[in-house]
Amino acid sequence: MKDVLKISDLDSETQTQLEAAAFRRLIEHLNTRTDVQNIDLMNLAGFCRNCLSKWYVAAADEKNISVDYENARERVYGMTYEEWKNKYQTPASPKQVEAFNQKKD
Image 1 (spheres, rainbow, N blue to C red):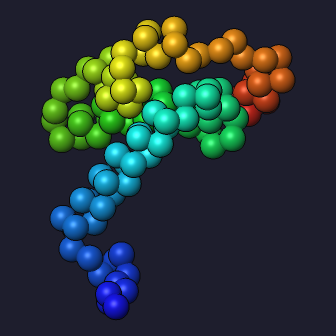
Image 2 (image 1 turned 90 degrees about the horizontal axis):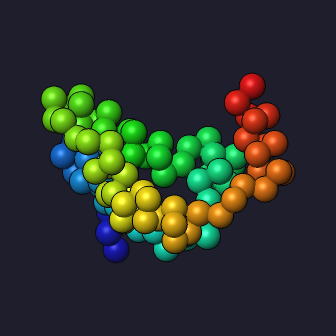
Image 3 (image 1 turned 180 degrees about the horizontal axis):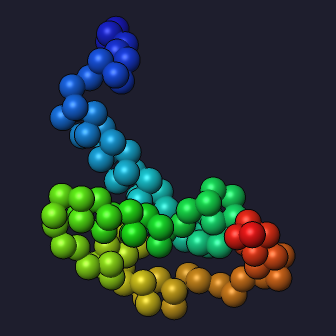
């Protein structure tokens, strides 16, 4: 049986590797759930694929690395944003828009 460690007991490199693996898994999961629209993610969790793309760019910026937003989107969406929109995006329902607008206020 493996020893169970507290995350805080792991060295920072291992923590970063695990966090990166979890991020990649999240991206893979979102790429298999193309039925889940960004507005649904925003309404339920307060973030969407575009937010992840922006966070990716911001993380790169913190390391003085210039990453283009569209390139980050392609990483998150697994294809260009335009291609994803054309393949998978559906019009938001009035209920989705209302929920989104209520959260913005």
